[in-house]
Image (cartoon, rainbow, N blue to C red; front, side, top):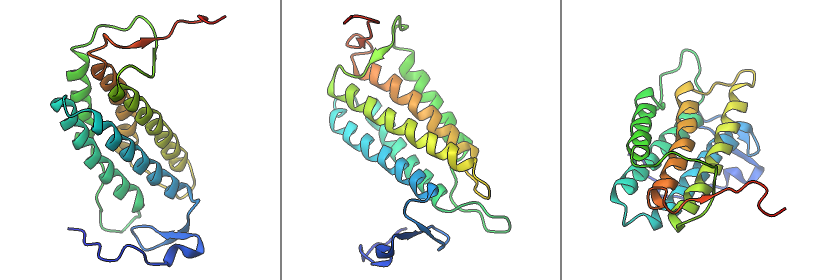
Length: 190
């Protein structure tokens, strides 16, 4: 259980922040950017959920995802180091559950005949915002993993890749199972 009885510590006033290991890094560090962008994805999903009360199945899925994103933030905040005790990590079963949720939503949708523009219902539009933030988080995580002496769990990267797919499919589900999708018309305004 986490207990937070003091919110400000002043330790970040020098432009650094602590990882879960206690190591201090500059606030612009790529690892901080990675878990900060995962947190931003989570916040965007929180906004989505303001619009999903009438979609209990989707809302429950989003609630599970929000918890998983906290797991991923904890994973990223504690870099893997040889000889250290294992900390909370995103695991393949979380990716697999997300795939099952994608399939469950996608089974109800008609195949696409065009790219979809962000829009339609409020839930769908905000799901698209969350999707684009998720894609950015994934890019930062991949960049972090490519750095010397940095590690990012492969399940975490896979999770974010699937999550962006989930958020796209969920946007179509929120658009009355695709009936309210706003389709791209190439060159329409030439």
